Image 1: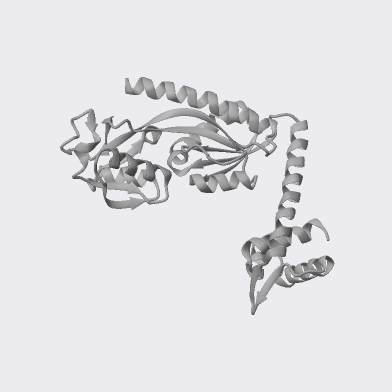
Image 2: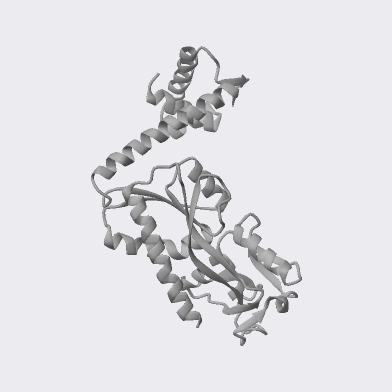
Length: 304
């Protein structure tokens, strides 16, 4: 067996489909089929259960896949160590961020970093918290910026900043002239929210319950820019964290601080402790700590 054969197996095991694996790998399907058959012959055991044209990874295949993925992780880390020998200025960083942070902050943050370290490369992802934790555990990424404290073994986490969550109301709304509001005062209004499954949605729903009501959600979306736009057009009120207000557009609703209950979230950076972090990744992690410290100071000044 060789590494290419193992890569073929890894892809087929993930997709459980020969044709889709061949398309993803840009090779002919018979090549994939022969590679899997040869691998099973060399091992002397079937790795997939076959029902008609359907493939399903069996218990032997799952055990073998675990070892194969470990092999590729070791090879990737070896490559990272070799990159480190050339210094932290030429490495690569795998970074994931929450959807509710990335669209507003990611471009400006990477731009600032690249001014100082122009040769460092990035692999960038936007995902929900649970998906980012899975990416960390698979060593698909080096770091992720999340708003939920990871309760998983071998995951390191450093808080970066405490971010206020504001109430957004349309211009001309009965509350629009206020600077502060108790959350219980908006119980009768319809809300524009992120879809269920986003940590921010879960957090803000819980804040509403803490204030004594269940929010009536009129519209749901996947992006905070959509939430802001719908609120600005008078279709409801919504929650928008402080960093999301940095995105300037022509649909700006009115921003109100919430006096009671305290509405905020903690943003932090997480990494897998067993995963080798290159010099570039370690350098970028320190950059995040310093960058968010400045952001928190600026946001505190803006709110004062």
